[in-house]
Length: 281
View 1 (cartoon, rainbow, N blue to C red):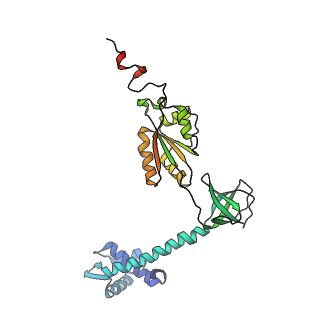
View 2 (view 1 turned 90 degrees about the vertical axis):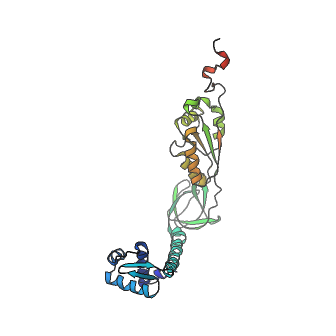
C-alpha cells in the first residue's frame, strides 16, 4: 500500500512534492500552502526535508526542481494509490452497489439470486446456480423489478452483431430506391433497429419495420452490442461515416451493406426511366 495512505505526514509530503513538480522551477510556498492546506512555514520545512533526502534540488531562491529520485518516489507512491483506488472501485464498491433486475420468479428480500442478461436487460432468478450471483434487497413477483447488491462472479456476454444498411440520399432516389421487402428481411432477426437520416426513417416506414430511435444511431447500436443484442442501423449514405465512427470508438465489430434497389424505381441518372437512345433525332 502507498505510504501516503498510511500516515498523514507522508501524504502531506507527497502532495507538496506533486505541487513542486507541477509548478517548477518558480515555486511559491504560499500557493503550495494554500493548495495543500498547511502553513507556509510547514511547507518550508517539508521542502527542506525533500532537499535533504535528494528528492528536490534548490536552484536559487524560490526556484526548485524535482530530481530523478523524487520522480521515482512519486511514481512509486502514485502506483500504490492507483492500486488502492482500483481495489476500492473494482472490489469494494462493486460488491456494495445496487442495481435493478427483472425477477424471473418470486424473490424475497435477502434471497441469493443468479444474474443473467436477457435481451440486454439484467434478470434475477432465485438460487446460486449461475456464474454470477447477488443478494436481493427488495422482494418482487415474477416480471417485477428487484434491487440486487453483493455482486459476485462474472456475467458472460457474447457481443451483439451490428449490420449497417446504407440507403441512397434523396437526390439519388432516397427511400424510393430501396426494396421494402428486402429491407424488412434484413431487419427481421435484429432485436434493435435504429435509423440515421430522413431517408432511412422513410424507408423503414415503407418496410413496416419498427424503429427504436432515429437519434444517436451509432451510439445506440454500440450500447446494444455491449449487452449482447444484435442490431441493424439503417443509415443514409451521408450518415454512414458517423455511425461507423461511433461503432469503432466502442470497439464494436460491424458490417456495412446496401439496401436492395427497388426494381420499379428508375435509376437516378435516368429520369422517368428514359434511356439515352430515347432522345429526339
